Length: 151
Image (cartoon, rainbow, N blue to C red; front, side, top):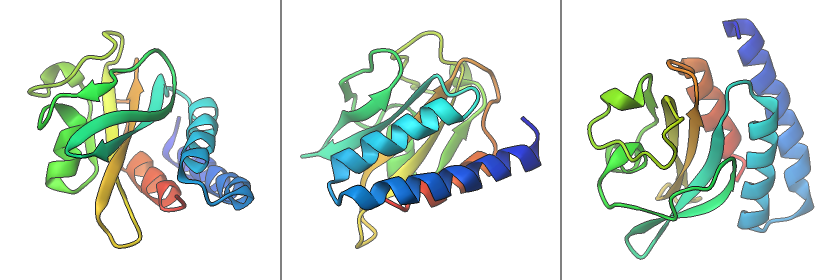
């Protein structure tokens, strides 16, 4: 998808999700709705979901796609890298990422965005995998960061 088309799609998704999230303040319901919209509206999203911090562990939350790893090994993989570095991580080729956790061997690229509470503390991540190499770019990072800000 070209840069302008992708940017426009994220803007439309942001508007749609922001309207849908008016129905409830429940965080799990909001996450589930957001993931469903993203997963079905964005080309190349193979697995789309949240991993949430709970007592020092990173546990799967609402998601769409194949069965996920329920618990991610501490300080390993892209999700933990995004938490530890406190920033969005884009991985063009997961095979080249040291310590990548392969919950599904069909995943080829990944983007992970930290999810913060109102106080700015990281409480989890939005994780998106693609079957395509080099699926994600700065347009995805900006669009997804803005959208998860709605949680």
